[in-house]
Picture (cartoon, each protein chain N blue to C red):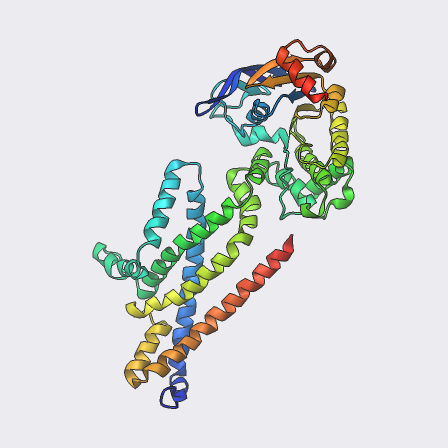
Length: 241
Length: 220
């Protein structure tokens, strides 16, 4: 589904991603962890070309992301994204936030788009907020709207960039619950997070990054109990205080 | 006092004043629409990722806003006939005024656009919206709220600057006032009365902008 083949990225002199090789299968839930500045968000943002790669090959569903001939807007329809800071459009109601892309990109009729939006709002547990504005919602509710917004395009892949990092602690659970049910339904998910509990419980595979490299990857049970690499061990031991 | 402010001027010449008033109104509306359209386009150029567009936008703004309005209007009115383009005074003045004001409007809009968080653009683009759709549905509706006060100022300036029509026989308020003055020599009265007609345009405009600002502030 997603394939990184010797991918490098530079910001000027700074080598952000170093020789990334990674394959993610359809239906897989991959959690990327690592210290801040390790390149995890950058790696995630390359998948829908919010960041461009310097060299190597990155394909999504067989389509080259970096290729100039690729219609990026078409590719992005199939890739939902949820951000740390929600990024809801503040001048639109919750419903309008969710229906914008289906109407404008997928050319759904407003009625059809509203029905789909209500279906996903139901799913994330806040159908009663359809007419509210983002500023009237709590952080947890806003992030659930953002997830519904991503799902409304019926994507093949969902990307999550630290979806709970900006939330008050008591709201983290409600967002993770939505993500868990999504994982159970077989959505292909790539999640950058600091929520180790989520990684342990939901991930099919954990990727540990440091200094722009994938240092270790494996199934969560093995990774969290017997990390092979020294840097991974250090990182995990610092979390467990 | 009655010598200084002769109300009979206003009564005797009311038709002339009104004639100028409507031409000023027409010229202002024309230049306002033109300057807004050009301003939006140049603002989008200014923040484009395409280097040549950005360069053009910057050159346009810096050139236009740093030369006198009178020069622009003279180029259109007196200069273009030499290359075979004859514009009447309305078109020459309207184009000059519209282009001049567009540089200021572009700057106001650019600032407003750049005040919209980058994350909103990323969210829109990552859902498959094109750059133009993102601008139209996500960025500009938010930017307008921030842009409105400086935009209102520019539009008020535009109405006042339309008095430039007076020097190219544009038939506007200023032009008519000059004619009345040359007939009556009641300079103070003539120009104080013409000021009233300008206020008739600018004060409602100012109130309207205030009203829009209040309405937008309540919107979300």
